[in-house]
Amino acid sequence: MRLILLGAPGSGKGTQSQKLVERYAVPQISTGDLLREAREKGSPLGLQAKVAMDAGKLADDSIVLAIIRERLAQPDTANGFILDGFPRNLAQADALGAMLKEIGQPIDAVILMQVDPDVLFRRLTGRRTCKECGRIFNIYTSPPGTLPHCDRCRDRPVLVQRPDDNEDVIENRLKVYTAQTKPLIEYYEKLKLLRRIDAEGSVDEVFARVERVLAATLAHAAKT
Ligand code: AMP
Image 1 (spheres, rainbow, N blue to C red):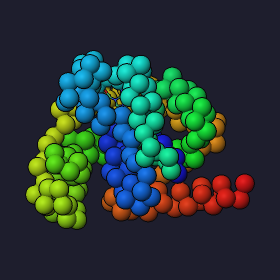
Image 2 (image 1 turned 180 degrees about the vertical axis):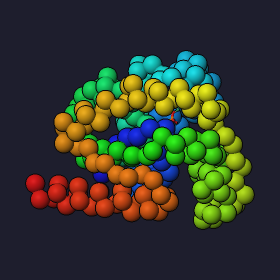
Image 3 (image 1 turned 60 degrees about the vertical axis):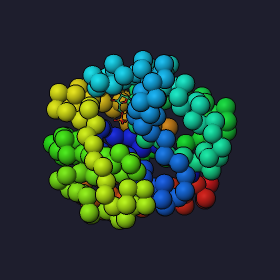
């Protein structure tokens, strides 16, 4: 299964990707995570992306595309993948389309996670990530203790807040989403790949909606 999760920052793409990884055993490919990793390692691409990331702007397409190309070449993507936070503008979507055509792996569906802007803001300011295992918590809606046991952090998550989850940068990220990423809705609608879901409610409620959409998509693909 090859999926794109599309939605504003805070719409739950990362959280739902983690659930999809468990359910379908395909990797999550988050360009945000890959860029943060590259930055932490001090790689030239990561350091170049840092300025844009700290300001809540998009990193250069050339950097992101180089990272994605390398990631999609890994053998664990052979049975599919979940793209989280990529593509984020029309140029990236075109480049992805060309890349997947080259390797004969077309996208099955693009799931648009729809969330009210006020809810997004609260999700982003409340978001915390465990430094050890990468699980995403929210101090308002899913605080530590509400998620199952994890071997890596032994249920003692080391919670950190992303530096770009502060109010000024959040505002910028939401503006960038509206200006540059939202046009992808129409782009994928024209390609008949877009599936909209209401992404408000609990993690499990949203996941149930994601699964319903996927079941319908896979059933339709099996018929054609
Ligand atoms: P995320 O973790 O998806 O919220 O991404 C965090 C930051 O990484 C974004 O605000 C951008 O600065 C950068 N980033 C992530 N994905 C992309 C992308 N596809 N294109 C450009 N910049 C990206």
